[in-house]
Amino acid sequence: MKGTTLPVEKDLNQTLIDFLKKGLESGGFDAVLLPSRVPSGDSFAYLLIKNPSLLEEATPLPPVMPVQGAKAVSSLTQYGKTNQKILAAMRPCEIRAATELSKLKQAELENILFLSLDCPGALPLSDYLENPREKDKVFQEALENRKTESMRPVCQVCREFSTTTGDLHVGRWGAEKGRVFLISSSEQGKKIQETMGNQGDQSVDSWESKVKELKEQRLQERAQFHEDLKTKAGGPDKLLEFFNQCINCHNCMRACPVCYCRQCYFDSEAFDLPVDDFLKRAKKKGSLRLPTDTLLFQLGRMSHMVHSCVSCGTCEDACPMDIPVAQLFSLVADQTQKLFQYSPGRNREEPLPFSVYKEEEFHEVETPYRKTYSKGEGKNA
Image (cartoon, rainbow, N blue to C red; front, side, top):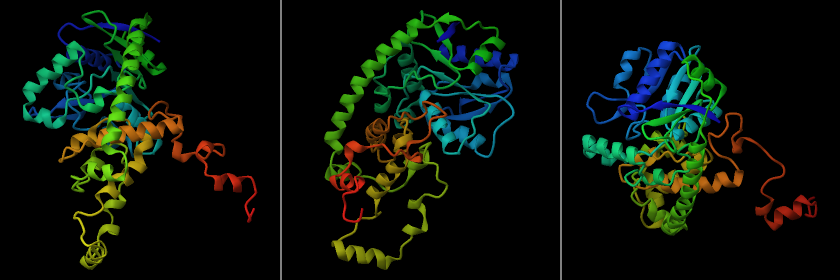
């Protein structure tokens, strides 16, 4: 892997803005999709920008993630591809989610180029809203000192913080002070570099070495994090207690980039029941909690999207009851994806595990009944 280096004269944000401006002006790409601070100053929204002068208000690496970037890509391309080249600047988890949406036919990534960054994580949205100006400083300090203690729990143990699944990647790790790496991770990325006059032929060994070291550390921390979580949510009783405060608002579903169904079963007429049905259930059980089926919703949603979960944490940010839902989903996602040897967003050509049938699969979890009949020894064989 090769790249070049960019000087960080003021701060990383301005360095990225200058690079994106140069890319627009040189024709490396036709438009840019990236976060920008809203006028009130307390949040960020994705903007599609063609005028280079408007990039000054943009924030390629915002301190929070109020909108998952994959949802912005989906809203832009779900009805067809663009003939112009759009460079989307996003965190690695957002790019990986966009890749999953493309496999689910919810996004068209032809002519969508991605600029990813070594991600320090994101601050909890609820914390940020308490004092945005102060939290901006906290995030900037964390970015400069490369610390994660103030970030969301799933960000602190993220193992994909430097994943290069896009076309260009900005690497902070292992770079000399006052510089960052700009790494070409695809042929399209190389062409952009050449168009902008960058050779892109420098070694990035120091970045790769530092990333490897940090990933090994994160993997150990993530394993311990999940072991601790199992003690809190393992088993039916603890799982019910874990989701005890769920109010069935479905905010987590709406914030999740890979919960893409236009009509969710849990929002359908199947749950529009007359009062007599509730009374019958209350009579059978003695009492009935309202709203109903909160655990069923969480487990149902998990079973549908866990193979594509990228642990972006937006579901947890969206929860008004502060349920650590992203942490539990990351645990189940890790276990499920390991079984299928699948990493969401790793490769656009790799099929979703639930969409492919393999005759030789999961023999290690077969029941004796299944083994008997598969050998033709059952009575109806």
